[in-house]
Amino acid sequence: MTPSRRPLIAGNWKMNGMREDGQALATELAGRLRQEAAPAFDVLLCPPFTLIASVGAAIAGSGLHLGGQACHAKGKGAHTGDVSAAMLADLGCAFVLAGHSERRTDHGETNAEVKAKAGAALAAGLTAVVCIGETEAERKAGKTLHVNGTQLAESLPAGATAANTVIAYEPVWAIGTGLTPTLEEAQEVHALIRAELFGRLGPDEAENLRILYGGSMKPGNASELLALPDVDGGLIGGASLDADDFWAIAQSCP
Ligand code: 13P
Image (cartoon, rainbow, N blue to C red):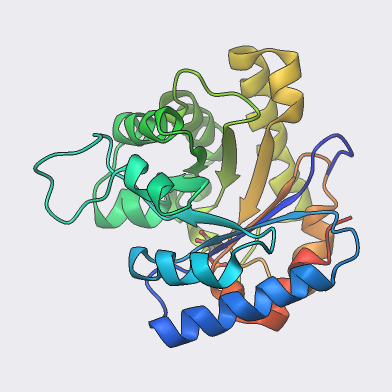
């Protein structure tokens, strides 16, 4: 973390939760944020589509931010089962994830599609959280920096700024496995991302754009990851479903 960037702690609930669970978790987290005298971090909740409205109602006025987990690249039309960025904005979302590795794997989303979806998010007034990360095979082949550089270059939408875009580095092999990169490895990738952003967006935007780490972030490892110079928050899966764990991570922000 660098003081100029305010940490963002984001919970990606993935395909978890019925209305009652979601409402209880959101209400609990809203209460915790209200108890913070001067929180030094932003908090984002990304529930499944079915829970966005009820979670939005539960966190209204709390300062917690609401986001979707995915959106379609088009504004509307014949796309059964999809939702548009404008629909998410209409429900009170301010953020949407784009290109999470589970979308890339389960739905075959390519860098070009991720870029289009992130662009649609910006056009709808949302902040896009563009997700990138190498697989275990790519890591073993020594391609980590190359893969992340390419994914970033090809997934970042036109018009991206520090105000409307967040990057999330999530090594695929670290997601849900309990494994994490070493601190040196994590910082190396985050520094590469920052350098690429410098080339694309210029020094001011690159310096201010938040780069999150995701992949088995837990209360036990959050402090050291969040203290790295180019790690500006976390994108948390499993631990975001437990209010105590998620809040302990948020409170680990330097
Ligand atoms: P875990 O925190 O469960 O490893 O998931 C990370 C993730 O994929 C967040 O988007």
